[in-house]
Picture 1 (cartoon, helix red, strand yellow):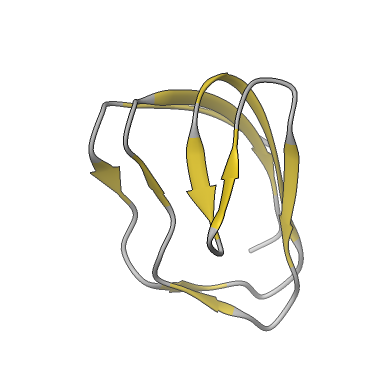
Picture 2 (cartoon, helix red, strand yellow; picture 1 turned 90 degrees about the vertical axis):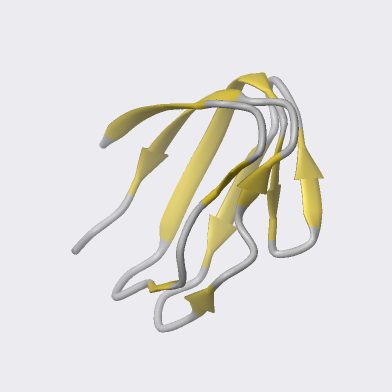
Length: 68
């Protein structure tokens, strides 16, 4: 489990999910797999998927739960 704070314009590098990754947005907005998520929204990246389009145009604080 990890609390993440990112600044406006943050873009996360390509990564592969060994297991499912869950996120819960506390503040700001993120875009995950083409879907915009705001405060109170939750998202999932399924196991064995690759992601290179996770970003925040506004800056955000979110909780993520995942396995390595």
